[in-house]
Every structure is written in C-alpha cells, then in structure tokens.
Image (cartoon, rainbow, N blue to C red; front, side, top):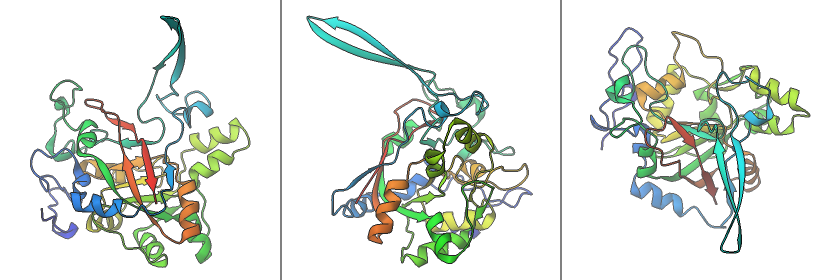
Length: 321
C-alpha cells in the first residue's frame, strides 16, 4: 500500500498537525505497525548470524517496586503470591499475580492509550467503542495477531553525544532532535528503513540500575524530568517519512518530559499518526554488543499479552544477532 509523505497528510484543524487516519484503511487498528510486511520480517531474520539473544525486558516489578509509594499517580508494582499444594503425591507450586499494570514496566502503549482532544482516538474510534468487551476497538490484541517481528535499529544517545563532545544525561529534560537522530545514524553508517523498530537508548535504565539506594531510584522516577526525543513537527516528519513501525526507548516516556498542553508530543502522535511507542526497554546489553561489533541492527521480536482491549502490554521483547 502506498503511504503518503508527511507533507501530504491532511491537516484538518488549527493546530496544523497532520491526521493520518484512513492511510491503512477505515478499519485499521495497527497504526505504524502496518509498515512491517512479510519481506521485511524475512530480511530481518537473516540478520541472525551468531545466534546471540538479548532480553529487552525489565523484571515486572521494576521500576515501580523499587521506588516509594505514589511515585506514579496510580500504578503500583504487581503483588505475587506463591501457592503451595500437592497432587497425587507430587509437590506442586502455583502462583497468582495481583495488581498488574500492563504498562508498569517494559511495555508497549496501545493505540487506545491516548486520544486527541479534538478528534478522539486513532482512526476515528470513539471513546464509547473502547469497552474491553467483545468488539472493543484499538486493543493490544491486534498487535499480537499481526505479529511484531522486524529489524531493530539502535541509536545509542549517550555514546553518540560522548563521541561528539556534547553533554547528555538521562535526566534534566534534555532533548535529542530529529537532526540528532539522523547524525547518529549517519555516524554508524546505518540507514533507517520502512518497518524498522527504532531503539533509542537514553541511559535512564542504566542510571536506575546504578542508583546507590532507594531514595536515588525514587528521585530518578519521581522527578519526571526525563531526557528523550523531541516531539516537534520535525520529529513527527522524520519518524513518519522513515516508515518506522515503532519507537522503543529505555526512557520512561520516550520523549522529553514533561510535555505541555497545546504543544505537539509523541504521545499525541499515537492518536493522530497511529505511532506505536514502547517505554522502559532494557537496551543496555544490546547497546554494548552494538558498540563492540559496530553493527547497529538486529532481529527484533515482541509478543505482547493477548489481552482483549488491552490499553498496553508488557513487551516480551527480544533482540537477536
């Protein structure tokens, strides 16, 4: 299917921001994941030469189980209960998980996570159509049925900025622009292609992991001054015209935080572009391998929870090289 350029998308309101509804059909519930096709997946699988496998998921209790109460306005870490039993002479263990917020750790945002204040949810879905019952719209189960298996492309911002002598920290609301991403890719000789998952390392997970105590970890999460990607029109254009399937980051929010009412944000692009975002990915080991080998690409696979109407899901993601 031919996808229009960013400049050719309709801009139906005074914000001047584009609306990409209908690009993949009136009933589409996948957004930018549509950029992955069978040929893209087959080519990405061919990147596996050494058989190295990298887990990209934090434990489900991280970060919320390692910060203070009310660090998030409503999410908490899951509570796990071990159940002991016996059956026909066998010693049996079972468990139960309560209070699981699917977006509390390494996760994908579903397309029903954010609605546009003017037009509503992606592709014209109305709030009353998001029910989590049969026929619910924009649930995470559509990601599952489609299948996320494609090329991952690493942009390691701390290493890139260190090479060019520019200060960077995962906190402080520092911003990496679209031009910075282009320059970082050019420096490693990597070309972003249609269907890629762009993996953006900011260093936040590394900082959280290295924190000396709970108070320091709590400050890293609670202060909300996360450094990340710019959210301006230039970034929207870069991501759209590059044809990315998704953007996944080790940052809590992907984009620089806080965001501001009336300004573009990548979270707003969920609704207007169908942009798929992933947060809190553990990219450190993969980044080390990319730095060692000089190769910034991998075979990326993710199998979210098959949860009807899910607003988000643990990513269950892996990279292979």
